[in-house]
Length: 128
Image (tube, rainbow, N blue to C red; front, side):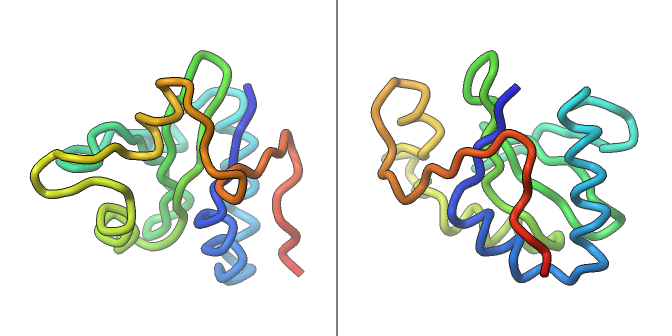
């Protein structure tokens, strides 16, 4: 499984306190082995975010992600519970259902802007 980190995810991850980064890294290791492990509390999102999933880092922090294809997963956002509202506003959804989310574009085989694609297999951004 390959995980791609959006630039938004990387910015948010850098802002997390160190006391959240350590559990986030542990949860990511669990996620790599089984995205539906009970310790992650993985769940499908609803409403405008129905194309996305989320898993828990701790009681108040989440990671929003999507299954792009059989072997690729995109991590889009990380933070407290408010990331659901913030991510819904900043993703490419519109109230009338017009427009496409970056996930729809990726699924159709179009190339995303280079700045949105950050590839990593195991290493996380440094927490120092």
